[in-house]
Length: 376
Figure 1 (cartoon, rainbow, N blue to C red):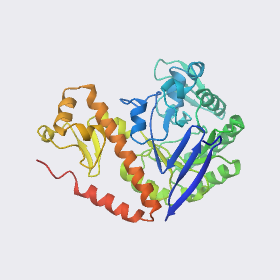
Figure 2 (cartoon, helix red, strand yellow):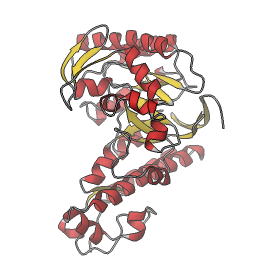
Figure 3 (cartoon, helix red, strand yellow):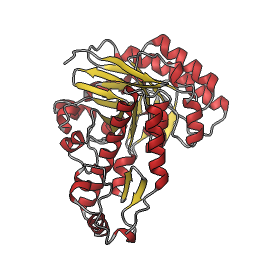
Figure 4 (tube, rainbow, N blue to C red):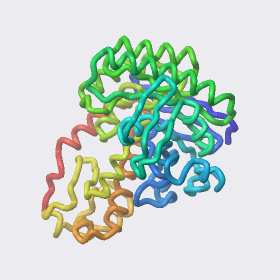
């Protein structure tokens, strides 16, 4: 196993790429989908169950963990990997997005952000230096630089101001991160939907030099068409020999479209959140298990899926336990959704390696167009 962080690009098909990110905690096959373990747990899943779906890496959240149980406590208990019983790589976000979207009474300055906790109202300050300290205490393998992300739509002046502040914070994050062999720091491109601002941001990040580069500020209300328009050029502005991470995305068709445009890594709470609310993602699109038409249906969610929910249980059973508010409902549906997402990533990796991403994409959209039509 490697003792340092490195990225190997194995094949390309158009802009789509497949490769391996090597870390001391294990390899990450790309394109990669990262299940979200916000508070040191992927909701409704045991760590070994998450690994069984095919996940190589998990995502944790700086904002939530700094508030509860605190990064200092996790560090005293042996770090985040030991704390949550996950021995593979972990990426932590910087906390910036959650501060902007969840915290109360925020005050933004050049130094950072002061805010009150959404949990108990306690006052906190988060700066680039403090974000790097928290992520170091957690033991994150991939650390994200601290940034500010305005919601879209926003006017050009607001986007420019935010992006340039984020680039100054990126330099401070790089300085505070220091030299840590085996660990990686990713910069975050900002600029909204403005191509010139995206280029300015990418140039600043390339000059600072990071181990990987994220595309931030998307999936914040702009819609898929606008997001894809931005992704038609944004990944091309980033170094080809480093991983490219699209933050907070998304639905299966979002993921396929992002990979087609050169993205290597993605994360989203959607598969686990959907599982807890009775939504299952399948090759034919989204299925709502609470609908009455599933009450007498002996079929699995997806006949091509090998997850425990599809291998051992019928739609009728899953409908029953969801309606009965049994915990096993969220467990099985989340397992299925995460399994489906990892199967999707594996299929794309294989298609890129075979130089047939176009064939994969055509089949993907054709299957979804059929819908869940075989109703008994």
